[in-house]
Amino acid sequence: MTSETTPSTQHLRVPVWRRPFRLIGENRRAYLLINAAAYGLGLLGFALGLAFPELVAARTTAMVDDGTADLVTRLVNFPPLFAVTILAVNVLRLSLLTIVLPSLIIPFAGLVLFGYWSVQTGITLAPTDAAGWVALIPHALTILIEFQAYILLALGAYRLGAHWLFPHSSGAPTRRQGYLRGLRETGLLALPALMLLVIGALWEAYSLRYLVHPLNQMLL
Image (cartoon, rainbow, N blue to C red; front, top):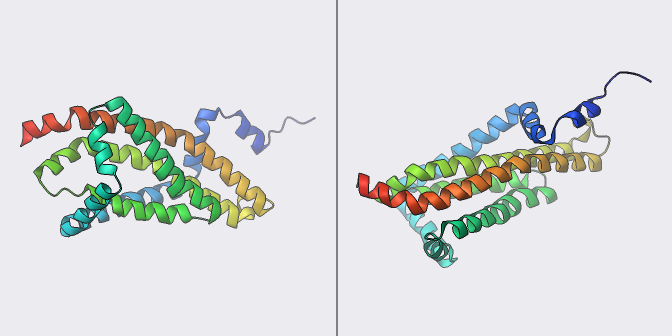
């Protein structure tokens, strides 16, 4: 018998709630690069929306046509239900369908789709009048919180692709085992991502209901 501790044993001794943060620390460079790309593309979209208002109008029309605008109008006065709806959309359509599931089929696909979504979101958020600028004051925090959740999932998509395509570089003997290791890491990062999405949904629902109108009255 030996007293030597293997790396896998050390990993098992780390509490579950700390493992995502340890994983982020071990991949700090990739995490920071994804942050820079996500916020950078969002700001690019925002700048395009300011420079070309017709892009904002097209996004607004699309939201009217797909029922999003009507749904927001009907739910904004009921913050608890609005928060649940926001959370469902953010988890299902944005987290799973945009980032996670595509990455399970094509390596790094979720990163590309997330980048496209970031630009489109920036365009959507570009104000076209003074009231729009005021609404950005509370909504800026929503953007920061929700983007961080998606960035964590994007980091998971990156790790999944890296383990999948280059299993030996991460210590996995086969691509299959590398894929499974990437899945585990994505699952770990999904835990804090989900917490951020819950916080973001609550803040978005209640700030739209109780902050935007008073701020408009104060500032305009």
